[in-house]
Image (cartoon, rainbow, N blue to C red; front, side, top):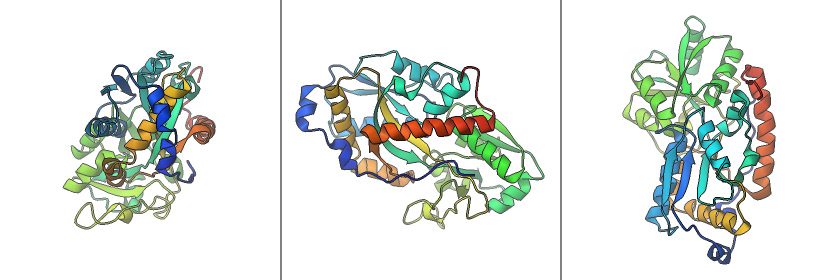
Length: 331
């Protein structure tokens, strides 16, 4: 089952295209709020706080950036707050694919068009993780076991990306999982370490610390190709050593958006400021380290190319949500 497609990567420098003159035309006059429509400890939260740290460390903005988590309603709380901050250039939101799934599953009157797209910073991968003490060392062993016992699959939220992948696995294997939702990817990883669930499809950055410590084990990555990487995370494996689901016999693929949006109604100089700011963020060694540590797909898009991608993804997610039976009233 194909759940995504590759897009050509754009050079980070394209995000920094607006002239410095445009930056001088406007800059924030008070602290900038960066909303995270998800819980603490997850991939979006970690990325937001790294962006905050880079801006502070390199003095990229005179005003401070404040990270605020708004996970309520599968992220709806955060999206609606950003939407309702019309013409307020001091409100940003870091987005994941719940930008598409939350309106469809909850029926809230919201779409990505209600915000100002700034840039796609990366696409995030998903891996199938099990506790390292479990008996499953390969995807084939896990799939065979899932046919004889009902696995508890932990994930972030309900009717969101993690559950979409879970349904796709069920359809591809004929197995049935008990899906257990949590507020964030950090909590999901902790629950798996504690053996309170049997498996997760967490993003790499949400589980890498536990993998490195020897408490979690990756069985596959839900991408068309293996993850980039060199060297080792553990004594024996690095990101590049994790097989794709398809090469291990499971035809499921899915990647997730990591992007930045602003409140609606931004002026061109305000949008130019944030485009330039993000261009300087992604040029730092700290950002490159994050991309390597989290095994991100470094596809970057801005402007009309980003809007075209969003339009296509909105249609694709509606199809995926309909197939999974996740469309809510009014969705």
